[in-house]
Length: 190
Image 1 (cartoon, rainbow, N blue to C red):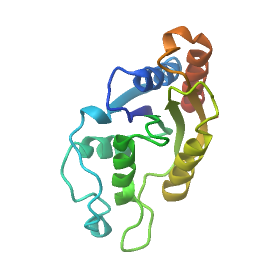
Image 2: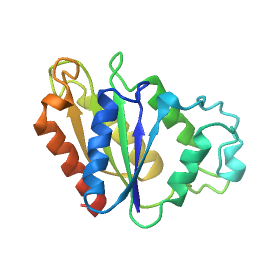
Image 3: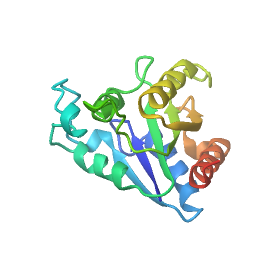
């Protein structure tokens, strides 16, 4: 098993990446392998609605999403994702939205079957500059609902870093601890 991190930030060393890495570190403490994909460093487009995936259950676009699809599909045993996004203009980043749209390839085939690999758990990571911790609970719920409804992913919880610029993760041992605990929960499936 490995826990796959999705850093939906355009920056690979920002607050979202730091928090995703912290969750992955908690999983690694349980002896689980980890891997992270930085969407901001990947060359991929959004879904073009070509419907090529209906025949093959694979996206017809050949770009930097291919290694991610392969990692998700090869992940054996217990399966887990850490999905992180900064909040820009009151919602997920453009990179994360494009990634979610590209998961459309897993939604249904011509036979009506869901093709996303079964048995995935996930944790959601949100970062933003507002100092109100529950300000974007609606975004978290929206993301969790999409993952559950379209891909049958079980959401184990979330970690939020608010006021991220003024009070970064390095100054927030409480949030770092929550993130590591979430990683352990993902590793253990509880």
